[in-house]
Image (cartoon, rainbow, N blue to C red; front, side, top):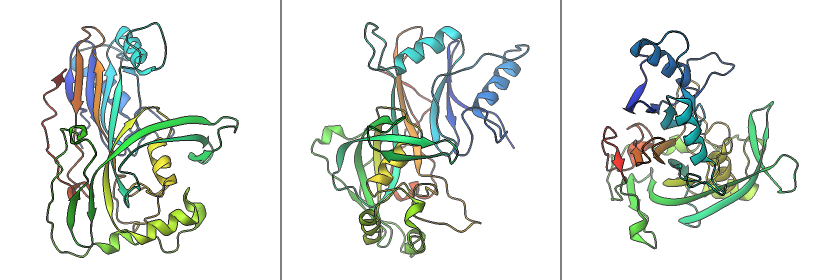
Length: 309
């Protein structure tokens, strides 16, 4: 097995890398290989650095989420990137300039094609599960994101439909919003896993479960994450009645134990100021061409070339 990190950009200050699904961002109780350890080993071997080479973790992705991440190679770079992440502070020009966008495939179609979601979340550390609670609950954290529906496909008829936003100029340049015909192989059995699911298995009301039963459609959404709470995207979309595809923790679709499908959540765009030069950089990494991503048409750009903006 190749344990080399999937690096797409590197200089003396930062490393930009693709985190695969299933790999922890940093070491955890599982003792599985994590990305931070992998990058430290990479630096030690490639730069002949004795001991534990420095790699700064400035943001995280959940184990089940894949996509683009940036790590710092110096403590100064780590501090400056961290400052960019800490949006909302005053008195520093770098605050709030670290932007993350995600792609997700969700069940159904949201009532509003473009909206802002705001909830308060509380994590149960023992169960490693997050729920939506009232703002007054002790320990609750405010969670905010915005989303835009890009495409919707009905697997039963194998046709993809364009979702037209109010402002065509808002459409992501990384996504091709096109109508695409697929094979006629019946796929409905992949999405009928609601049978036998208990209400306690997901953060859904009975109304939301009924809504889910009414539609086999899948939607591709672009998400701008404004706060970075644990399991935030998964919990907020589950609460709206549109859980993420293949989300065993918060969703409703069940797959056979011998069938593994990755959670349909991908960190596809990362924009920040270079910690030393100040150059504005954008990195775009498209999701893998696996199910259910292959149901949607992407303008797949080479992530080997960064955008300077």
